[in-house]
Image (cartoon, rainbow, N blue to C red; front, top):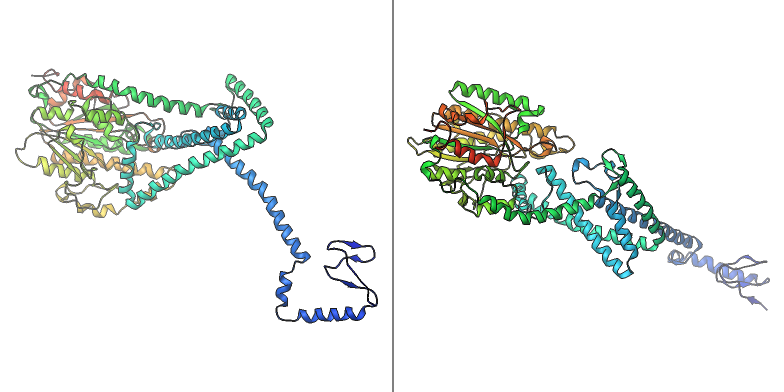
Length: 622
């Protein structure tokens, strides 16, 4: 008889048997034949087709070890990923609370601070019930996301306009920025940039909210540790605030920058709302509102008066050592050349209401005699009946024109300024390759004005406002030299020069780390614009030409530094000696280049001073 007994279950062992075999029946001693048959059958089966597949699907000790290792790896990775995610969430929140609002201050030392807003936020979350805690955490996260976006906007505005973002009034720059991108990098590039910005805004809001929610759950799980930490850090913050502790020079350990930034922007909204009434009161005062035309500008009768704004021509262009020697040489040489041609000049400085951009604000300030330092004031101005400087010329029977080479579409504000004719990129007749952000070079603009307005013998006296935009950013490509004025034609003569020099993307690559190439490009454009004006006076100037040229604002901080003032040079050039005699009491200095101690006026005072000097009540009046 063959006696069978059951082997121990998988993983069990007996003292006499040793390690158990897997799930099969073992024969008792004396069952050799049966064992041999079974073994033979097993060997035969191994060689049969498909046997390898069965072996692969059967669980073996090796397979179990592999699965166990994979599961172990997953279990080990999960806490690492969780802590990594938490660390990233913490860094995002700290960035929102501690990051400065200027790119130049964005250094590791700026984060060696304790944000009191963060401590207060944690304390608030610790005392709230679970449901309210989640809601408040989500709101705090969204608020921090908005704070990050505002900081990024502040960084951009400080870099471009040397001031922080105005949350109520600066949305007008969106359209101007998109238009600039379109003319600089094309429609596709502009659309791509806008899409990227929208995606970035959404990502910041979502990631910041998720980060705060994650940290809130961590605080709730470790409420005792969190409470003690807040208490200790709060005491350290108070002591640091009282003693003015600084680990990094200029960076106080006791930080309240996030709250201060939020408060400043909220206060700015309130100031903007109140400014509307304040500006209306200022605009209501106008000493020349009812002055008849016969009593205006009597000291300039019969003169062609050209008011030229040189884009980004600021005080630094004539005083900063990086530009002063080259730009100063152009002005000094121009003074000698014009003096040889019988012209005299006087120069000083005006303080612009803007810096780095917003040229239209400076133009409106000079022409209206009002301080137009934001878009709200500009809109209020162009909706009013304020007498502008060009309007005064028109009232006094001058032909008033605007030459706007940078405009490529209708300009509704032109109706307020009351020009008899507006020339822009569509009707100036330029057929050459566009320079810069799609504009003709300044020499062509001046040549077109001469051809369209002053070339006709016996023409009526004309007053022209003319922004010269070759020196507008990105300051490349730039014409390298003037051509013969009589060969300017339709501008195609400039085509070869438009292909010389580096493309904007090349000049601006890594500009924030090394702005040398950008600054050199800026200087060359200023030199070109000034040479164009000087050469125009030499070529077309006569006893009836009066040229007033000035900068609209300083260039961006990347070019002139973060601490530059807002002063711009202004110069009056005339052949008729009696014109400059009228301003002899102003104290302006001789020549095209104002000296460092030349008089400085606010730009909004120029209109009244000019109208007074050249009116019947002015000095040397008949």
